[in-house]
Image 1 (cartoon, rainbow, N blue to C red):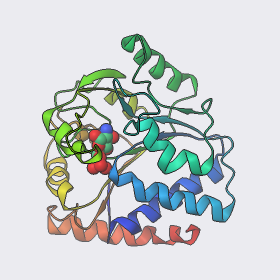
Image 2 (tube, rainbow, N blue to C red):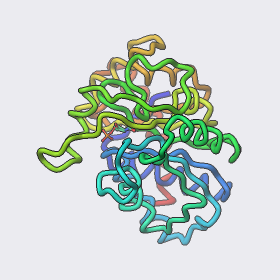
Image 3 (cartoon, rainbow, N blue to C red):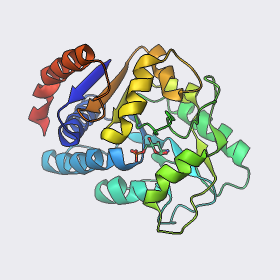
Image 4 (cartoon, rainbow, N blue to C red):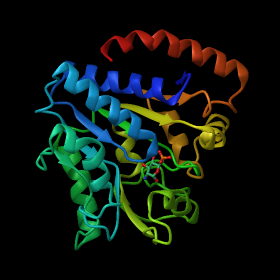
Length: 262
Ligand code: GLP
């Protein structure tokens, strides 16, 4: 379940190669996409790779996990703007194929229902990318979120708002609410890759390893998924038991042949 890479760059390279490989096998793939600092090197590599290899991206569809309530898509700190900046402006953005929740939807509850429904109409998510918050949230499913939750509006925790304040200008107020895919929506993805990098995630990863499935640490729900891989760099893995680190570093080394795509 864990794969441990020496550093964030080699992890990003592997994830990017996996995406390219999956798109080549199934051009009409439905991807679940995530935002955050962890994903930036992944999208950077992916853009380089698809340009170098002239990968056909005309058919894939994507759904993003979450969006801040109250930020328009063209607000520089919206997740729509993040996706445009890090991915879509480089590969082409077709609003009919790439979906994000709308933080300005007039009826948010209805919008959440429509968003979850649209995922189902597209046949569900084939491959979901996930990051993790330091409090164990995935998407914006904060501690305490029911494991069977669907797309919903969430009040962000103080911890999440502080963590994410680094993406906002000094003194700016981080939105207090967001729309997120629910844990059940995420669990319905056929394959999940959760990425965590850096020392700042080491305690979260250790909590994931040590806990049973509990809404107090939402990421633990992935322990029930039949095809979820937790991909770490050495720093994020540093508080795992030494035998786990040894075994999982070895299995990541076996994945390295995928680098031929890079
Ligand atoms: C945000 C996003 C999550 C993301 C998490 C981790 O709260 N809603 O989807 O996984 O932050 O972000 P980072 O990669 O910047 O640590």
